[in-house]
Amino acid sequence: MRILTWHVHGSWTTSFVHGTHEYLLPVVEDRGPDGRGRARTWDWPAAARELSPEELAGADVDVVLLQRPCELELLERWTGRRAGVDVPAVYVEHDTPRGPAVATRHPLADRGDIPVVHVTHFNRIMWDNGSAPTEVVEHGILDPGPLYTGTRPSLAVVVNEPVRRGRIAGTDLLTTLAEDLPVDVYGMGMDRLAQAAPHMAGRLHENFPQGRLHAALGEHRAYLHPYRWTSLGLALLEAMTIGMPVLGLSTTEAPRAVPPEAGLLSNDLHALAGQARHWLEDPDAAAAAGTAAREHALAHYGLDRFHADWDRILEKVTA
Image 1 (cartoon, rainbow, N blue to C red):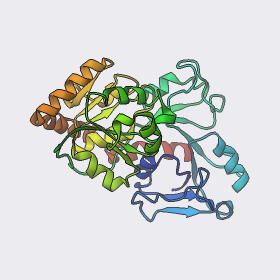
Image 2 (tube, rainbow, N blue to C red; image 1 turned 90 degrees about the horizontal axis):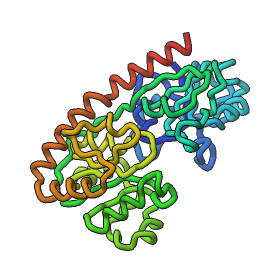
Image 3 (cartoon, one colour; image 1 turned 60 degrees about the horizontal axis):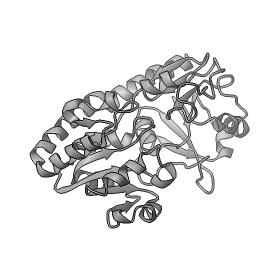
C-alpha cells in the first residue's frame, strides 16, 4: 500500500516505516511540525519517501494515517481529499487524555468513518471514544541488541523538555531522587533542567542521536521511568530491549509492560530508591533483572507482531 502519514513521533514512526509498504511523508521548507519529512537521527528505509504538499496533491494514496486533528484539514487543503470520505483513513492516538482523566472526549469521537487506534489498552478505556470504532495496536520496537553492560553505577532517564512537561513526566520526582542517587538524564531541553536542578550538573546530556543514545544508556546500571501520566514511553521499552532493569511508577500502561522479574514499579519513592541502591551495590542482581526485561520486551513488543497488527487494520479499512 501507499500510506500517507506525518512524521510526528520519531521512535514510533521508525518502527512503522520498517514495514512492507510505501510511506509518503509530507515535508515543508522549514521541516516544521506539519512536514518534518524523513528522520535525520534514525536510519529509515528507502520506502519512506518525502513529498512536498504540491507533490502530494497528485500522489496516489491508498490510505492516510492521521495522528493529530489538524491533519484532517491539512489533507483536504493539500490534496483536495477528505479523510474517511475520499480516501480511507485511520487515526492513531498516541497519548493519554489531557483533560479530566475519564471524561475527555476524543477529537474523532463523533466520526464513525475513521477508526481510532490506541497504542495502549489503558488509553483506549480512558478516552471517551464516542461512536468511533476503536482498536489497540501495542508498540513494536526495533531491536537495538543486548547493549547492556551496567558498568556505570548510576540510573539513566530519557525525557525531552523535562521542565516544560513537568509533573506529567515526573520531573519533580526525578530531581528529588537525584538529590540522593546518581541520575543521568538524556534528551532535549537539558539547559532548562540544569537551571531548575543545579544539583544535577554534569549529568545532563543533550539530544544524543538514537544510535549513540542506546549505547550510552546500556552503560548505566538501571533505567528510571518517572512518568506520572503519559502513554507507554517507547524509551522505557527500548531500555528493556537493551537489557536494562527498570524502575518506574505503577501508573498507566507500565504495569503491563514491566513484569516483576524485570524491575520495580511502585508509587512509593522510598521503595524505588531502595531498589536503586540495591542494584547500585549488586550489579549481578541488576543484570539478572535486565535479562528478564529484554526477554519480555522481545516477546511482547517485537516488530513482527506490530506490523501484523497494522497490516490487519490497514487491510480492513481499505477493503
